[in-house]
Each structure stands twice: as C-alpha cells, then as structure tokens.
Length: 323
Image 1 (cartoon, one colour):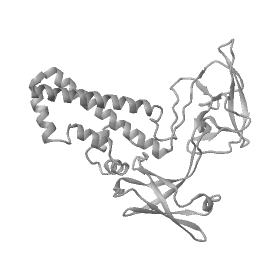
Image 2 (cartoon, rainbow, N blue to C red; image 1 turned 180 degrees about the horizontal axis):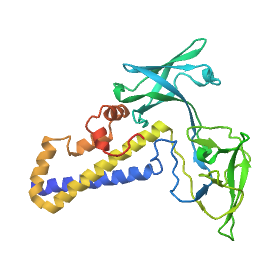
Image 3 (cartoon, helix red, strand yellow; image 1 turned 90 degrees about the vertical axis):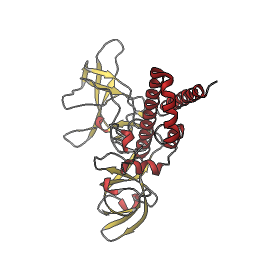
Image 4 (cartoon, rainbow, N blue to C red; image 1 turned 90 degrees about the horizontal axis):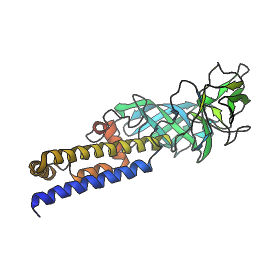
C-alpha cells in the first residue's frame, strides 16, 4: 500500500469516527436545545394548544445587579424581599449573561455574604480569567432547584379581575373534534424561571391550554390542538453548556464532511496538500485539533466565548451558543 493511500485511508477513518461521535452526542442531548428555560418548546400554530405537564427540574432565581472587580463580582440586594436572607446562601450558582442577555455556559458562585440592617452584600467568584467586559451587569442567583416536577409554562397561568389565578383545563372529546374547556382556579405552590409546578386540582394527567388569551370562554371550542410540552431538562447554565457543545460537534462534522467531499471530488492530487496541512497546521484540521476542541475544559469554553478566541465565538458563527 502506497504512502498516499495510507494517508487517504487515515483521513477517511477520522471523518467516519468523528461523524459517529457527533451522532451519538446528538442522540444523547436530544431535547436539551433550549438553553434559556424561560423559552418553551411549543409548536407554532394559529390556534390554541394544550398539553399535559412535562416532568423535569424547576429553577427559582433572585435577580441582582453586579459590579465586576477582577475575577470576582459584588452585588447588593435589599432585605425588603421576602425571606431573602434565608434564600441566598454561600455555594449557590450564579447565572451570568452577556450583553444580549444570553446565558453563559458557565456560572459564578456565591462565596461570601455580609448582612447589614438594610441589605445583603454578596461576593461572587467568577470562572477563571473571564473577560467581564462582555458580561451584562444583570445576573441571577439560583436560590433553589427541584429535581423532578410536573411543570407548565407560565404562559398557561392566568389571573382574573379578582386577582385569583386560574388555568383553562381541557376535557377531551373522543367523538367530536370540539373539546370542552373549563376555567379552573389554582394556586401554584412553586413558581420558577418561566414555569410553575402543578398543584391541586391539577395533576399529571391534566390537559391545560398553554397559550390562552382573554378571548377564551368556557364551553366547547374547535380551534384547539393537542401537543406535547417539553420543558428544560437541566438548569439554565447546564442547558447553555450543552448547547455550546452541540454547536461545536455540528461545526466539526460539517468541516470534516466538507473535507471528505473535497477529497472525493479532487482525488489523489489533494492528498499531499492535506497531509502537509495536517502535519504543519495541527490546529486547522488534524485529528488532534478536533480532540482538543471536544475535550477543552468548561472554563476554556467560557473564556473562548467571552474573549472571542478562535474555536469559541468564531466557531459558533450565527448559532446562539448560550441563549
């Protein structure tokens, strides 16, 4: 076997292995594409949609305004907020946003709290060498997380003129295209970022309209479609991190597919040039480059996005790595 043939086979196997790895990763992260869990995965339709609740975590946060100082940030929050001194604790994660309010794939950590008569002074540790010039001064402390809860999007929760909260429960009809909707009072026991947890009289089998408006009236309606609501499967920071990793794999797969197409179309004349590129520029197309990109630490990914380093913001292109 000639040297050129061995080189071509090596490149082919690299492409195949990377594509298979990417496919396995896509399968493993299915359903995790919404990094910002205030957004809900509901289909676009001209009418109303209804669904059972989705099962998963629910995150509650406390919004703060931060001031950056090197690799740390400080914030003050008033004690006027209900039980805020009991909710905020050291060790809690902090959601960091960029200037466009996109969630970053790594967060900060509350490392110290000082209480005065009027407010809490909070010290936050940031990811190593984060370029804070790209960060928003708005952040959120994750004050609590549930592991598995039956959730609806907040869009389903309505409030009447009397101040009482309610949802529209759908009683499905088997023999007719029209379903009956019933205005049902409910008081959510837990409300988080964009979602609320089911509480009586609702249960895991309750069908609720997800996009109600003030035109709805009780009774039979026909402009209504059943869907499957899927809320976030992880915390907001984890969602952002998974989305960034997914964009990296998609970029690598496309790059290797394009390279494979070029090899097939241009034949052996390209082999020598590709080999030279692999040997002389390991960061632009070699197997080691792809492995290096896939295995970078979480801190490296965070910094590459904020600092716009090659392989970070440049790789993401028009994708929303952390939104």
